[in-house]
Image (tube, rainbow, N blue to C red; front, side, top):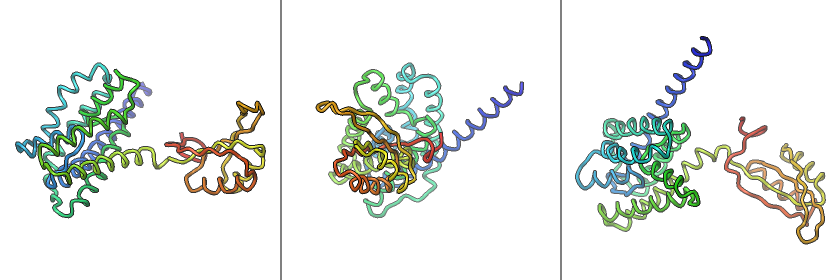
Length: 291
């Protein structure tokens, strides 16, 4: 009985937090779309971008139009996406649509510099989408289509699918509403900023770098890394494909600031060392983000 009560309490807390995040994310998306992008006639990606076209051409409410457009897409994509993701997304779609039509109009619409409007539209929308994605939900529409295409065509990357979809919608928005090359450029700027903000919020906080160092002085380099950065290392065994000589490979994860010190110090210890430095979107474990 106690386990059942604890499980129910956990579910209620999680559901309440999901609702709160949906509201906050919906407010940010609505502000970016309605209060910064609509008056400047910026084309935007996704179903909100299509809803903006209907808003400019026929005066249809953005939120309700996006909601109506989502219904057939959601029903078609439901078998592919699964029940839980589908239900979470339906909740998010409804909350975001209500906020777009009833809360966003209560705030003043920005009518200043178009570049500032584009930056605010991209950043605010990106923050809103990132918060929603981090709760394993979505605003439907383009997300549903994108994930469904990925499920049917696994060899296609989400980045390529999103780029094609967003590009087509932004181009249509420009062609049908403003017919202005500047608006097309601003629309692409918004799309770029939105994607960058989503990535940085979801992964950038815990992002870092990883280095693989092929060297004959593994112990010295590991000691130096510990002394300079306080980071531990992992030793891997390697073998040259041509020489067949065994080589030690030092692997170390660190933050962006520490990598420069490591690289400089390695060169002093072993000028012949082969250093590979790669971006790591997220580092989890001791010394980084807890599991």
